[in-house]
Length: 145
Image 1 (cartoon, rainbow, N blue to C red):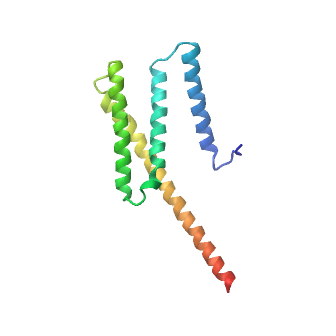
Image 2: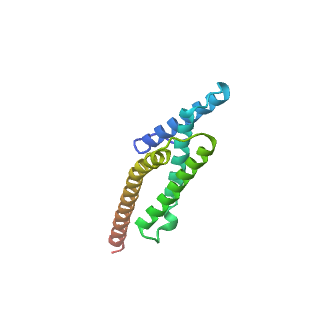
Image 3: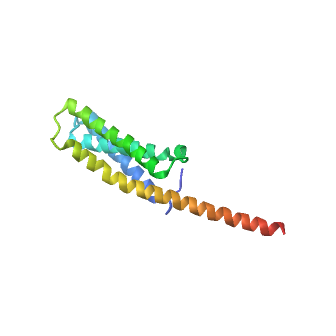
């Protein structure tokens, strides 16, 4: 079991919140036969978050390509999924006339914020790791003399 500390606190909070929310949806669906728009929206947000996290986690496979190209391709894949999900849901229930625009905005704005935060943190970690390596090399160089 992980010890909760200042470095993982918000990650643990978000994980617990997600599990409780998904559990609540499942329990309401099974025991109360309640599965309305709120539950559908929460599940849609969860699955879109899952897809976005998965796509972002694959960056290491495409590091040889320019960052902006990688971000653009990741976004295009995800927005295509969002539009496909919207289209499929439109086959089962009527959509609002602005459904595609609303889904586009509802996904794009948080995703753009998330991408900025993610890549800034990745580059910060890389910079910090490079500084640590430089210190190690400097210390090893002094030890050998």
